[in-house]
Each structure stands twice: as C-alpha cells, then as structure tokens.
Amino acid sequence: MYKTIEELVTRVDERNNDGIVSELIGVSIDKCFIKSVANTNGTDLSKYKIIRKNDFAVSLMQVSRDGKIPVARLEEYEEAIMSPAYPIFRVKDNNIILPEYLEMWFKRPEFDREAAFIAVGGVRGSMPWEEFAKMKLPVPPIEKQRKIVNAYKIVTDRIALKQKINDNLANQISAIYDDYFVQYKCSTVTSYIDSPLGKIPSNYKVLTIGELGCDISDGNYSSKYPKADEFQTVGIPFIRGVDFIGTNISKRNLLYITPEKHNELLKGHTKENDILITTRGVGIGKIAFVPSDMIDVNINSQLIRINGGNTYPRVFLSQSLISNRGKNEIQANVTGSAQPQLPVGNFKNIKIVIPPESQILDFCRICNPLLNAQLENYQEIDVLQKLLDVLLTKLSSR
Image (cartoon, rainbow, N blue to C red; front, side, top):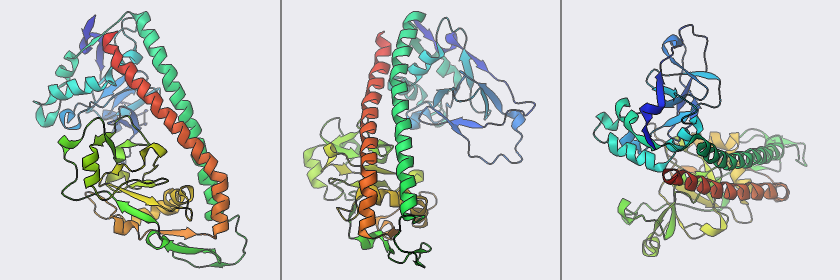
C-alpha cells in the first residue's frame, strides 16, 4: 500500500520560548545532523524550533542543484534547536509506520532523484513543503517493517563497530607519532636546536616536501580532461575527493573512464603505496591511501598523489601531514578565500620534521600493523555500505 508523506507525518513547530534548549544543530547534505558552528552570541534563540528525539528535519532549498534532500531523524539528542527555516515533522502513528523505516526510505538515491525532478521548477531549485508532502512511499505491514529495520540495523551496527575500532587505531597511531616526533620522547640526544617548526633534537632536520625527493603529481588539467559525458559505470577508476571514506577510497560511487581516455591522461596515475591529498574546497588536506587494486588508475584535478618510497613510508608521511603541525603547514600554504586551494607548488613548500632513519623505521615497525588493520576495516565498511545500498533499493519491491 502506498501513502503520501503527509498521510504519515505531522509538522511540528515548537519554539524555544524559554530559551532552555541550547544545542544548535543543522542537517548536512549527507542526511545527518551536525552541530552548528554559527556564532550565536547576541542571537535570540527563543525563535528557534525545538526538535525532539525521533523527529525529522528537512532542508528543501536548492534540491535540484544538489540532487539531494538533506533530511534526517534525530537520534543523538533528546532535544535540540534548529533554524526556523527547517520544516520539522514526526510520525503520526508508530503502528502504521516506524520512524526508522521512513528514515530508510529517505536515504534511497531513488527518493533523491524523484525529489530533484520535482524541484526543477521551483525557485532556485527548491521544493515547497506541499510538494514534498505529496511524495509517496510503500508502507508494508508493521511486522514486515520491523524485520526490514532490524536487518538494516544489524549492518549499521557492524559499520559503527568497525568505525569505532578505526577511530581507536587512528588515535593510537597519532599518539605514537606525537611521542616520537612532537614530544621527542624517543630521541637519543638531549640537545636541541632551533628550526622553522620550533625546537627539535639536534640530530633532526626540517625539510620541505619538495626537498624530500618524493614522487609527486597532481591530476591532469589538460584539454583531454574527461567531460561529464565521458564518465561511465565500468572501465578505469577515476578517483575524486568525495570517494574518500576515512583514509580509504570507497568503490560505492566511483566514476570510470575508458582505457583509451586513461592513456590520454599523462599525469595523475596512481602507484603502489601512494597517498592522495585533497587540494580544493573546505576539505583541503584530507588523505587516503591507494589500495592494491587501484594501482595505475586516475586521480582528478583536485587531488595530489605523493609517494615517499622506502625512505619515507606512507604511515610516517601521512602522519606528518595530518598531525596538528602538518595541518598548520597545509593551511599556511593554502591560497584563495572564495575557493581555497593548495596548488602542487605550494604543497611542495610544506615543511615537516625529519628524524634519523632509524627512528622512522622504528615508528613504522610499530604503526604499519595498526594502519593495515585500519585499512582492512575500511574495506569491510565499504562492502557493508554496498549491502545497505542493496537493502534500500529493495524497499520499493517489498
């Protein structure tokens, strides 16, 4: 049985009149809630809407442009506040439809495509609430919904567990790097010297990325760069920053080009043990490791690949870039305000601390197993995410 959204939900407009609720959140394009970074000093929060656990919030602006409707169900908090611009709604009757089942429907790519099609005629590609409310979805018996939701939750719980393990592994690697190369607890000397990055042990040095002798290149910028209609669903992978999931490269939404187009692109072909770095937009400095099944594939023009070989192994080089010191160096070399970017020439100017070879090798001996475990977990997460995609796709046939 199909029902419209308006048959299943009711809009909520509860205001923060007494100002007690202070947790301000928004909805991201990835359909999850995020803490607001807006400066609320002097802002009258009494006009903001209260959202409660299991309520939904949706942003209906620029739907056709983004190709997605940012909509999410609140799980993280018992209550929070949101901008008055967000429509907030909740399920009318949990015996008719489960909030978790409705959330699954909203996550379907097919739902986003339908919404984007409807929104094309709207102002700036937005969608009026009335149009959103008219969208339909299948509503199976409640027991069937529970089975569907439980199957989905088994997979999401497994993903959450693997992600928690990976967060712990990343923290361990970061802490070991800090002990070795920031606090210098493993240094064999007691004398220090001044450097552009502060005081360092006397047997250390500071070099720029360009002085390391690493293999570095960015993506191809030539006239042969693939046009939108040249991408396909099979062929040679074409890696973008949006394909980064943690430090892994996800295969879920990869673009592909033909072998002929691949051979036309003379730069940006990946090699074994490459590290990829994002160089455009708000996510500058994110890294991912090239897996063994993505060697000699392509990176787009907004990525840089770097390979330190055996001299500067990837676990050392990557931590040098994502440590607080590395992040500061990256930001110091970013250009542009409206569209921040990190040109490859500026990337080569980034300074890092270089310890004696023996300490690099000792650090890598400890941390390589941790990194490998992390990457294996990300591979499993990618497979599980594909399973979630399959479960969502099958909702319309249930």
